[in-house]
Image 1 (tube, helix red, strand yellow):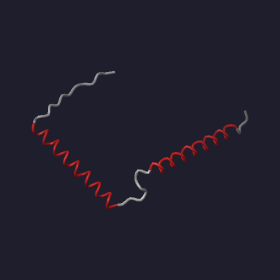
Image 2: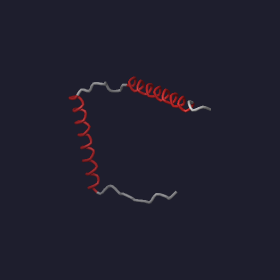
Image 3: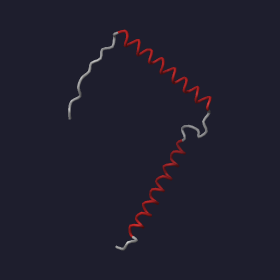
Length: 80
């Protein structure tokens, strides 16, 4: 083997990596569950709705914990 062999391996590895990244970016663009341009008012409305839902769920959880109807049992996990 001569000294040029490692350079060719490096070039081939770079081409393979570039090809993988190109396919990765293309697959993300095709899936496109959300549009690339965001709509700020709709995003804010969605976040507010989600936060209100979380707030309501926390209220329910706190009420359940305060009622004393929840029994928590703590056990140790078996050692491997």
